[in-house]
Image (tube, rainbow, N blue to C red):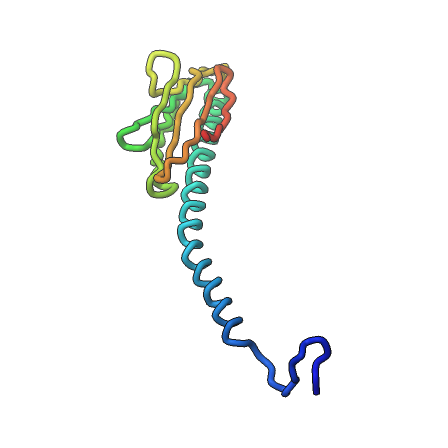
Length: 158
């Protein structure tokens, strides 16, 4: 039987040609070569966003506790140990940024007031304004900006 328009005879065999199989193998090989590095970069960026989000939430929590408990709260950043400490009243917790993934670190911090490495929340909710910059191992950076009124914003650095 002749298949119309192809010029080939249908001999009843079905399947793929060697060229088709080799083409699929080449495409899969290319994808398997690229995928791990893309996934690693994606995971590192995600870890950085998670760390920045957790730190921003801790800053908001310190503000809320200062107002609710009528006690000043401080967050002190330790660049050398890649950690920060939240203190106020009976609350005293130290957190490490390395818990969010290898390579996440505090690049810099700058806060107004007496100590440039400390955010101080007053009982009325105001605080020392400033910025903390986080970086991961692929040099992606995020800034966490705190205003005088305690508003926290995360900004991606291009």
